[in-house]
Length: 499
Ligand code: NAD
Image (cartoon, rainbow, N blue to C red):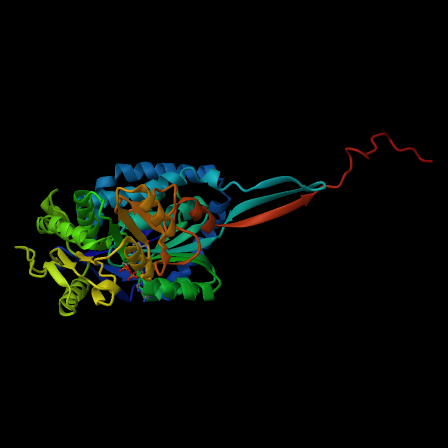
C-alpha cells in the first residue's frame, strides 16, 4: 500500500498526520493507498508560506507567468498517458475518458497562456477637464481551490491555472478519494518554473476545508462538489468576508422532440447517461420525450443500446464503456435508489443490479439501469443519483417538458434534440439553466467561454474558467488622475532676475 503526501513549498511532504483516509481501487475494492489528512495547524502554516511566496509571484510580469503556463501545457501533453493512468487508477474511469479529463483541463491552461491580454485594465482619456481614469486588475493574494473526486485532473486545472496566471498563490485541496493526479500536476508546474510555495497541494477533509474557510489570509474560495457542501462552503466563506464561487450538483434533462433524429438522440443519451458510470455533473440523467409515440420509439432504441454496454475495469481494454463507481458507499446508495424507484412504481426497463464481473466481485460495479414512466415526486427524480441510471419522464407537450426542466431545483446543463430551429431557439432563450446543448448532449463550454450552472447548481458570482475566471481571481483598482496645467502653458524658462 502506497503512502501519499502533500505537495508543500515545492516538494512532496508527508506532513505530520494524525489521521489518514483510505484511497480505494474501485475495480477491486482494495485499499491501494492512504492519504494524510491535514490538521488546522498544518493548513495555517502552509497558507502563511504561500503568502510569502505570492509577493514575488504577484510582482512577476504577466508575460513571464504566462510562459510558466506554456511550459506547463507542454509538460501535460508529454505526460498525458501517465496522468490519464493516475486518474483511472483512483477514479476507475476508462483510459480514453481519463485522457478527456486531462485534455479539458489542459485547454484551460492553454487559455491561461494568453492571460496578459485578459489582465489589461481599462482606460478613459479625458473623463473630465484634464482628468484621465484607468483601472488595473491585481491579484487577490492567496486563494483556495477545493475539488471533487469525479474529475481529478480537469477541475484542479480549472482552478489552479487561472488563479496562478493572475498572480495569486493557491492552496488546492483535492478530493481525498483521488488525490494523486493533483500532486503530479503540482510537480509538473514546478518543473515548468513555478516558484516554490505558490501552489500548495494539501490533502484533507472537513477539518482542512474549515481551516481554509476561517483563515484570514485566504481571499477567495473556488469550490466544486455536491450541492449541500457547496452551499455550506459559500455561506461560511461569505460570512468570513471572502469571495466565493461554489459549484454544486445537477439533474440534467434532455428534451427529445417528436421531430428529432431518434437514433442520434438515443446514442447521445447512452453516452451522456452512462459515460464515467454517470458520475459527471453534466451527465444527462433525465430523458424527457415529448408525446407517447416519441417515448415508445425512444425506449425501443435505448434498451438494446443499454443492454450492450460493456462494464469493466479500465485495464480491460478499449471496448469497456464505463467502470466502477467511486466507493462502496456510493454503490450502496445508488442500489438503494434503484430499489426505491421500483417500490415507488417506476418501470425498470433495464435492471443492472445483478451485474457481477468474474475476478472483480468486490469491485464497486453496477450494471446500467433505465427507468421509464418516472414522475417528479419519486426519489429517483428528486435526488442526484450520480450513477449509471437513466430515467425517462414522459411529457405531453413541449411546454410541459420545458416546465419540468425549469421547475427542477438544479440548473447545471440541459439539452434539446429537435430538427426545428425555432423550437431550439425558444428553448435556449427561455430555459433557466446555465449550459444548453442543441442536438448536443453534454454542453460543457470550450475553455474560452466559461462554465457555470444556475439555481442550486452554483452559489456565488461568476463562472469557472474563461473570461469570468480572470475577473474572479483579480481585484479591480481604478485610478482617477488629474495633472494641473503647469510647465506646458505657464512655465517660465528664463533665468529669474531680481526686481
Ligand atoms: P463532495 O461535495 O462530497 O466533495 C467535494 C469536496 O468537498 C471534496 O474536496 C471534499 O473533501 C470536500 N468536503 C466533503 N464534505 C465536506 C464537508 N462536510 N465540509 C467541508 N468539505 C467537505 O463531492 P464529490 O462527491 O467529491 O463530487 C461529486 C459531486 O460534485 C456531485 O454532486 C457532482 O454533481 C458535483 N460536481 C459538480 C460540478 C460542477 O461544476 N457543478 C462538477 C463536478 C462535480
